[in-house]
Length: 205
Figure 1 (tube, one colour):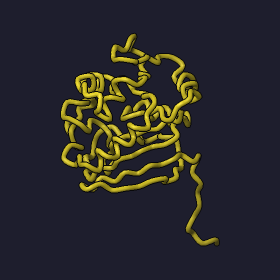
Figure 2 (tube, rainbow, N blue to C red):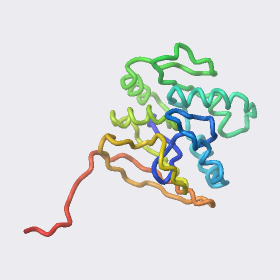
Figure 3 (spheres, rainbow, N blue to C red):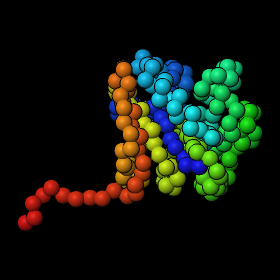
């Protein structure tokens, strides 16, 4: 399986609490729910395509708690997102969670990089990360993420947790797909290609 990351970002790179005011207030964040006014049919269609490719999920502890509190309540087996989240294998990366109660969930608490590298060797299409910024950043450091779906929303917040923080590992990407939804959400799919290359526009002296 390849590991894919799908996440929602503001124009200034904030990914914290896109779906509601109380979703994640850590660090005193008071702008939760910034995504909702821009949610449209184009975003929905894209997310359905993403979930249709999933064979398993890899979630950080905070994202797991948010998802586990909501998606089991959506019991329609024809729902393209709930049906997959509720039934497919879920691997929860946490050093504090002893057991994950949500159906078909397994806690990964030690040798995270090694265990995830082993999961990548399993047959299947995509092992998907949704949100889970801390987890995503740590896996990028290990070069374990194969593809990123970044949905940029036309809003700037000026504060909040970011996917690419200062000190992120320098990485170059290739754009493999791009689209724009009705409300101006740009969807970019990138594949990591290794360390950046550098040049100069200065004239040789």
